[in-house]
Image (cartoon, rainbow, N blue to C red; front, side):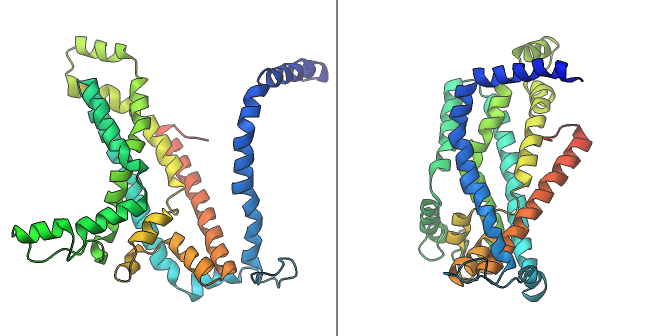
Length: 313
């Protein structure tokens, strides 16, 4: 393409940008917020490669290279149980949350009385606004071994001989965290699936009814295939977060009896960074977590693109 042909294209792009200038100005605060709080802190990754001491400048510090990374993988041996706990709970939460939201949206769409369906959706959405400290207080009041209302009731009614230590027994830790996440995020996660269902043309259902399809057949052959692309996109987007845990949740529910199954990378970084003040080591672990998450999202996107033909990039 010669330069003469490129000038009209440039003028057209410039006119489009000028016509939409107010939209870009509205977008500018969000872009600045993202840049300041997500990209500027990347400069702090330098701490992982130097012998940084709090209160001193960065650049005169001694260069240590990959010492902190080698220490995490070879000297500490912590990465084995950290990755086990993090991946087990986060992958389980990802599957359980998306699966529960998918099924919930399907069932909610089949309710004949829309007013009743809106009430159910509002009730399930409400836990999303409850903070984890309140959830922990409720869990402690209901499930504490000796004083929890649930354990006391079950013991008094003769269903069990002694209270079940749900909050402290390591064997319940993973499942309990996953179920709490499903309960808290069910309504929130189902909103996207409900929106996708609303975009399905009603002509499909009417045509299927005329062909003799019942409600289950219409749901299975129309609604479910229409939701699969949304499910794939959400799976790809969330796959990059399988190493990122909710710090508040695990900080509150981790105790001296279940820490071996509850300590995840977020708690480990907090312990070494803010409690032990070992900033280089904590930063190195955070960098490792970021790059592994990036690799995971690229791999899941490639697998989804090859298997289903649908991907984000």
